[in-house]
Length: 248
Length: 266
Ligand SMILES: Nc1ncnc2c1ncn2[C@@H]1O[C@H](COP(=O)(O)OP(=O)(O)O)[C@@H](O)[C@H]1O
Ligand SMILES: [Mg+2]
Image (cartoon, rainbow over all chains, first blue to last red; front, side, top):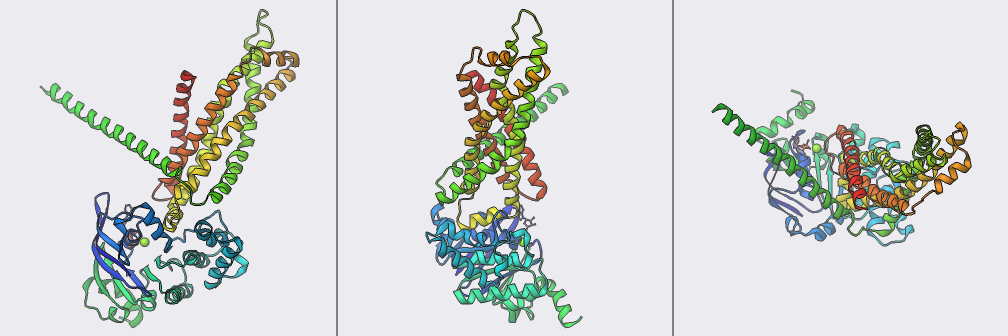
């Protein structure tokens, strides 16, 4: 479980996150939703410690991120898998090497064991063996996302963070990626936090949803409650999706 | 009265500008040393850093052989021809031309000028590679895995340049000598005997060591400044270009400044 208490973050004097409190449960898919520029990425990067928050605390199963020293933080980071908006695969490594990278860095397994684990992860995300030796620029965006998921789960993380996992993908591929994240979360009991502005993802993954607008948490609930929620700002955000679904 | 106010205001403005420039400079310097500290902290896996060192020696060192060869060959040739034409005096023995060219190549050209060229070629390469990794979140990906990204990315490049540049400089000296000899015999200005005699004339082996010391320092500056500029790039792809320009300018200025200092000291 990850708990955030009153986290605030500003850039160059501009407040981008203002006193956000929330709790993300273990073994479920937690969503952070909001329109573009509302501060979802800032929130995610603050939660993992890529940005230092100005105030507030973040607890990982009772361990406070702000009180950790460099080494404790490093240990925590080994328990975290993260999927970036642009996949962030290493250009100079092949698909297989990308997935093996965290294993090469942090395990003392033999080459054979590491390769096997990398292949297992790549198969888990349904990637064809023919592209293991290709470089990230030679495969499609959807495949890159899958490689990034495989890399994120290589070390069996306890926490998984996904920044807009299906941005730039077609609806079919998006659904595949969403399902994959949900399955992996359930299988391994991971605490998963996903950023999205896509309503299809909200309806498939939204076991727990936090809606933020302009750096402030405005609403919190589940996918069953979201469509009937009485919240002005949330309704504004949902209006286009509702129109598309139910007409008018 | 107005003059006094005016002066006062200007002095204040001057102070503010001065303070901003100086504090910014000191801040950058502090950040640079902090970066170096991180780069030379213990790597996560020695084996992986070692393998990266070999790759970097290949791309940065071996990859620069071409440009160093061409430039050294031509500059060696031009220096010999120039000194031959300018020392056209019956009282000055012919071999002096080769001697003058040798001194210039050994003392300044092969270390300083070759390093300035490497600052352009290798420096921009390092800064844009690391800068691209920064803006495409690859560095964030390393950090979030718990990898020491500075040590993983920068240390092998810095080591490769510290080892590689002195070798390149030695190589450049050799090629420039060949260029000088070829130009001498091809233009008929110098015979092979004159040239060989000039090369041996009053030769101080320390000059080679002097060149190598300079080269080691310059290799360190080029790679560490470029890696620093790339690592702290932020924003869009435009910023990658700016970071590599900054890297080239900053390392060239550092090389030129240090050249004066080292020449004074040694
Ligand atoms: N590193 C940064 N420096 C300055 N401003 C930033 C930085 N990161 C994000 N911001 C600002 O914070 C706001 C929220 O951005 P972001 O979290 O990326 O939005 P999104 O919800 O689309 O992911 C934006 O207005 C952006 O300009
Ligand atoms: Mg974002």
